Image (cartoon, rainbow, N blue to C red; front, side, top):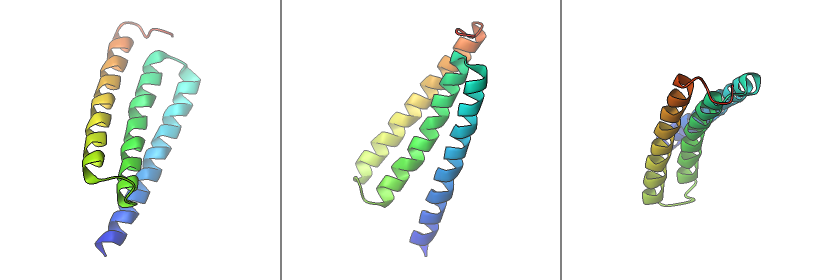
Length: 95
C-alpha cells in the first residue's frame, strides 16, 4: 500500500512539476528576459528533484546519491532565485 501511494505521489508530483516548468517556459518565450530565464531554470530544479525521487524509487542509485543530489538541487535553486531577483532589481538585463 505504501509503495503504491509513494508511486502515485511521485507520478503526480512529477507531472505537476513538468506542467509548472511548461508554463514558465511559455512565460519565458513571451518575455524573453534574463530574470524569466533564471526563474524558469529554478523551477526546472523542482522537476529535477521529482525525477531524482523517481530514480530512487526505481533503484537507479543509492539513498546517499539521492540525498546529495537533492541538496545540490536545493542550492542551485536558491542561487537561481537570488540571481533572478538581483537581475530584476537591476532593471532586468536582457529586457
